[in-house]
Length: 89
Image (tube, rainbow, N blue to C red):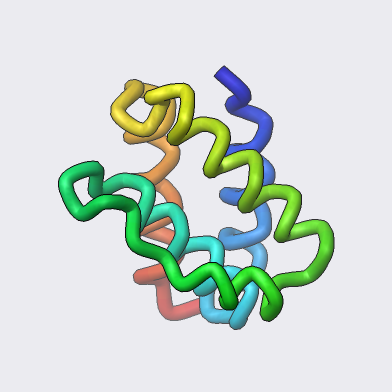
């Protein structure tokens, strides 16, 4: 699995959990995590991301296409990311 994508997303979110870029990536992560929801994400939001974060978003979508969103690595990293988002820093 391309855990480097998840790690890079985690580092961005951990560094600035309440920034617009972090929240955009988090919304995509949560959307990809809900398989029965059909992975509904407004693709125009990709325009709001930096070029680097768009590449991460594409990597996350590739992980979904490879059925990696239910892996232990994905779930563990998602928990860390959710904790960072909920932090007050």
